Every structure is written in C-alpha cells, then in structure tokens.
Length: 235
Ligand SMILES: [Mg+2]
Image (cartoon, rainbow, N blue to C red; front, top):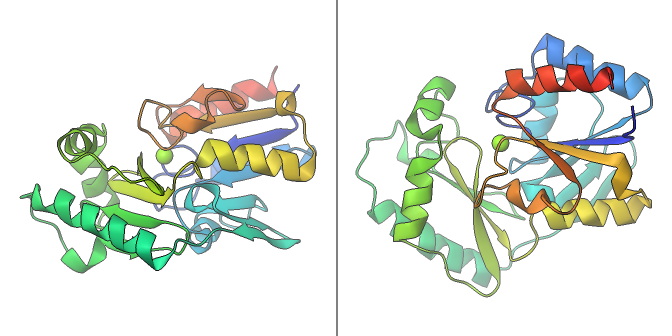
C-alpha cells in the first residue's frame, strides 16, 4: 500500500450521520492503524461527537472542518475561534435562509449550533432521527437551491454544505483542504503519502476543497467507503 496517512470525512463517509461506525468499519480502520497507517478524520462535526462515533478507534480528530485539531495522545494541536462579529454576520444569514423555509421540523431549538470554530445550521435538527434527516436532503438539492436563492457574501467567513442537513460556516479559507494542508506541514508528511475519502466532493460540498490538495476518492456512503477501503488493502 503506497499511502501512509488516510484522511476521511465522517458523516456519510466512515459512518451514517451521527451514528457510531459499524463493527466492520471499526475492524478495517483498526487493521490499517495496526499496520502503522495514520487515520485522520476531518469533519464538520465537533471532536466530542467524533469521539463517540469513532467508538474507541484512535484517530487524529480534525473537527469543525479541521479548525479544531486534536491528537489522541498529544492533545490539542490548534483551535481557530470565530469572533463575535463573525458569528453575528453568520447568524443573520441563517435567519435569512430560515425565512425561505416552510417545512416542519421536530425541534426548532435544535437547528443552530455554535461550535466555537464553526457555526452549524441544520435545516432539520442536529439530533433529529437519522433516517428522517437523510430523507430530508440526502441528495443535497434543497441546500444547494437555498444557497442559490440566498447567497452568503462575507469577506471573513464562508459557508459549505456538510453532513446530511447542515450548513457549516467558518473562517474564510479555513476549510478542509486548507486544514489538511496545514496538518501535513505540521507533521512534515509528504502529500503523495496521503489519501482522502469523502461523500461531498461536489462543488459547494464541504469536502470539495480537498481536491487539488491531496488525492481524493469520492464515496456514495459508508458502505461504499468500506468496500473501497477493503480494495485499497489489496493494492
Ligand atoms: Mg459527509
């Protein structure tokens, strides 16, 4: 196997949104780790949620699109915090987006999450039923249409489509691609030794920015990812 560092998106790539990884995914990732391969998860989610979902597999966690990097044993590597002004600009946009929506959600208080480095605005509910969430906008079309209708224009922050129902807002340019580049420099790794798997590599998706930084593999979902990971072992 030519790669030494495997990077992954989490929701829709290594696991079903907000769920623990399957025992088979866990075993497959653990085999790579046992072979000395680094596993790095770069997700729109926050690191506590990632710890739960990874179910004990020791990975380098890069939550909030990579703006909060934390090593399993070395601890925090960095944490980028949004300013109050940036947060209020983002909040204005989430309100404008919400004004365009007329659907019913399980809990209106479960839509807006300030994660520190990132604000995540879910159109259905962060903690809502996973099947309902996937049914709501599994093909990303609702969110793509909303962003076309209500574009987000800001010099300091930007928005990306992430997870299954969410808009991720973070510092402009501080996206997954930027943060992957930064961690590679931090550890002095070679880009040729790195590979990224993601389900949102399309234009506007929160994995898109990884394209051109390191080699990428597009996956349909966590089952497709598992198959592709198993195939990789045989290369
Ligand atoms: Mg994803």
